[in-house]
Image (spheres, rainbow, N blue to C red):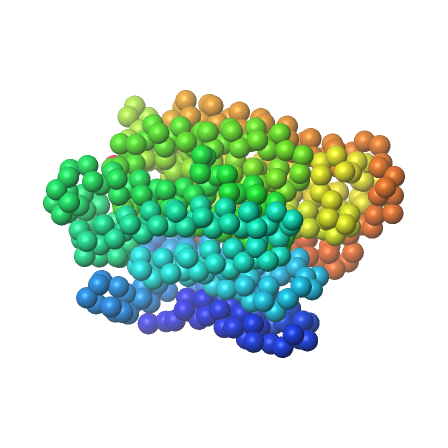
Length: 511
């Protein structure tokens, strides 16, 4: 048995412990250790990628040890293409966030320790396969995020952090209750075993037998759904997100939107779809309506904003709405559809690609917001600027690439994921796909509005002396921009890793 995944999770956790124990005069050392720990984690993720067998859809790097046998609790780790992709995304975004927070001078030891503990929680969430163990990491990700918003956020950070905590805790409680019911009925917390029980029908029959109610499976499903829906978030469970994203320091927002928001989508793919396929099919019209609402309404809300961070916050909801749409459309039986299995595979591959691409692009955009706040004394209003492309052309060009990536411009990474999503969804749920295209239109409008108001038009003389990106800042953003081009031209780099996992998942769903 190898221990790669355990070591990968321990690196940021122990790094955070060491940094938290440093004295108050060791700020530079704290920053340096945080960066080193995150880069070592990135190196570990790259090693996993290099040793991963992309032709197999099975779990790899598996660690399995009995923990509490009487309760069905195991220390059970493993990754497939989905898990590997999320681990890699976490490892990429965290060093960027640490570098973006290099100027944090208020308790930097605590700040960077919390960032590393958040990374450890994310690693654990994306690798754990037993609910008890997985839930510990799910909650571990919540606690550092709460304190990062509460202690280093903007003027309304208190209410924003509290709302974030309450929403996610309510979702977590619903999720916990659902899995306690499943444990009572089946005696297992094992995601893989529960998916196999769902496939052969024994999960539903066990729930009905133990609770004496035929439809108890639907109640359990909606409890689990709520836990993940809050995290994505799905409209109408989204109201915590704009406040949290806008009040959090921009480096923290990079982590929230780049990786933490993917925990909900990951939960849908890893847990909800394999364990509750029949319940999802029964509730499919509602699921599709919620997905379409998440796409269209969040895009309209983004258009109505005048704060750059709130615009990008609603844009984040919009982009993850495409993932929801594709996941639920892939659960359609596909009656009358030509080769439905191909359409489902396209949709789900689009989801995985969209998750990675959105994490990369959204975190980069919030990095640019951090850089513009640094130059403007904290201003980030849509109408605070104007014409600055004349004096910061490099900044304008690179942020423009990231904005066009978010828009889905062909040749950049954002295009391929959305194309695969709609390629799969149109045959399976044509009405939902047709309405959701309105989200693409509105997204184009508000992103072009950002470019026009901030970078074009007459120069606001207040910013006549604004400095362009420094050499260090260019080195910070260029790797992300290069990845946007690379994945836009060669998406097979990711699709080659995820395709076998998608096919395995489709076999599990028992169409």
